[in-house]
Length: 426
Image (cartoon, rainbow, N blue to C red):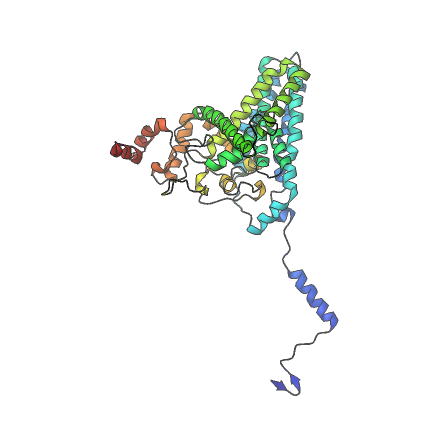
């Protein structure tokens, strides 16, 4: 179409300055990649977790320099922080269900800041442990105080197992070594092998020693998981070495390497500070392992992956892990409470883990659940009804402790299909 000699279909001509202004306008209106606090509002709050050994050092300083009448309060500082202070703050602060977007996850995964935070825990952990060994080696430290200080540092070393957990899922060999270093004080080095290659394969099944069953007390679960996980780690490492044409007793055996590191540390502490440190070393190891296994006990209690028509277990889904979004506990545990996403994406770093509405939720954060887990009547009252409700009354879909199966089905007035099937077959 033409009018008065002007071609209306011709492109509009712009002078060079106008073109430049237009280009700048377009550039300034393009979305920019998020970073820092815009990407993660809790970015600097994550420093709470590696600060835990610093709290431990503060407890030790308080014990060393406080008047004798209040020394035992500081000696018990670890359990006080873990079982009283953190749960209280956790309840007050509340929950955070915010999820990163798919784009945010990619950016978060690439940010080295978070990995550095995790790794910074380890040198601080060792400073706290060496300092504690010095204190318990002194002549005026009673046997009871040695044990109490061991329990306090066991709280630090128990959380260190979670630090090792975060590093154990990485693919870099250096991260695996650091994972072992975090496990050295507790002596729980087989965890580096069994957890990513055993537990993640069998989670929420009766075959998994690290998944607790409905009706199983923590005291029944503890020996089962400790012994079963240790045996599993040996089997996993034996198979790995066999594929390489190597025997178990080989310098490439990661399990032996880890336990060698642990033996070297404990021998060094005994050599430097004397046999007086032995009660402390035993107490901290026992408490740290027990603490971590309480968390294991909580994570999959009573949950079961169903089998398909071929007898194979379904893949791990959000409904196979107990979750919680309490902010404070998540800050201390690298969002371990967002356990469903961790099992769905084991290599996904903690800062990118998501909340799922369909995942079963604990009544409170892990820190608040530790003590109830140690008291079976309270634990069963809190959790068994939640397992029942999660499976909408069909306990045949739950992972139930065989010794109490009949009692549980009777309590909830549910027909046991397994029992009926056995009667038909017989």
